[in-house]
Image (tube, rainbow, N blue to C red; front, side, top):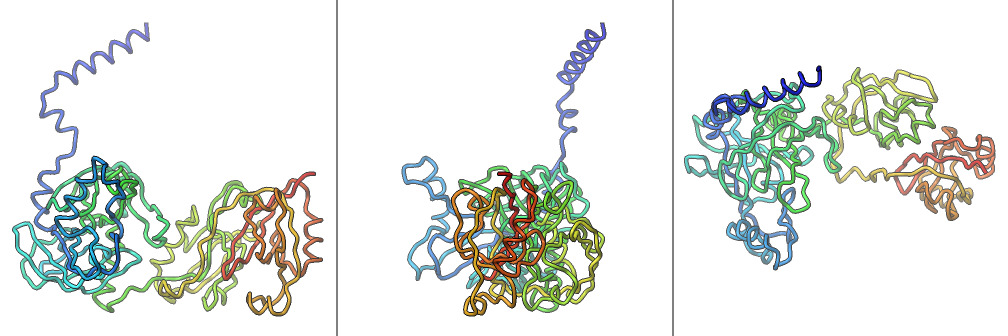
Length: 473
């Protein structure tokens, strides 16, 4: 009886939905027309003229590598070639297309850094077909933000909002010039927040499923109130076109970049001065953690304030100035947003105990000064290493002050599956410093079979932890 009642209720709901008038159905979805009408004029088309300096280089959005007999080849060629976007010889001029938007009535506007990279001339075209030559006030490659200025007055600026209040599932709208189609509007929802991408560790991207394509770069992302919450920057694509994964720089970060570019002409970010890596389930086990979380400190970098603090290699950073560090990728944006020379409190896990560490934040060096290699992924397994003590020449070349052993051979099977390679230097084993080859063998012999231990390796000028499981047999 109860089942029949549920079926009857469901049928009634379907019938009521089918007889609803069209305007009632439309009311269930967001209405964007007023927003587009109000702020469409604030969005501009940006093109650049530049001497060809490289072949087939389109930065974030690139011409797909398609065979000439592909049904999509002529389509992409049409939109790129007619605007001189296909690679020609190095002496020709090229025009790249992107979007931007006014943030003030006196001519300041935002776009992406990659849209205006290496430009000799930047042309801004408004919705009423006026054209301006823009001046590049400043650019920040790490956040992919560029600030431009045109000489005009009474221009229509957008309303600047905040990405902090965005919720996953919330509707958002983008306006831009995909493939050169000026002032195209596309909508979708926020798919995720605080997304970290491999090439931009300091930007907590907004991920959405808004249709973003080549030409949308630098355009605004609006919420339903008409406030700009992000600057469209990147897509994930295997074809060069939209595949449902779009990424925008939070407007809060973009406006901080704007203020710094206006006042100093450059962007300064906080720097902790450590190399971090993910806490895998295997490493979490070696540290006695219930579940993987936090950021594992693999190395205190030279000439950093971290070296002057009590922070140690092997610490797992769990909180930064009172904010949880759920994953290692959550730490860089928190550090980058901290003012230089500010004192911060870290909560770290050290040898099974929670400790408080005070660290002063330095300034993030230029990219060409950061020579640290990215940590590689690891897998835990058995051990089978032949190690030796480094000689004086090796210590000098590797920068070893004391301790450490060099991996001379990795036998098939055991350590081979951990990722340890010949030439690596083992600095700590089970969170204890390795003094020499003899002491290393003693440490290894004292580990209970079947247990995983953390091994700190120096490879080149970088350091990385591996989780290594001691075999039971």
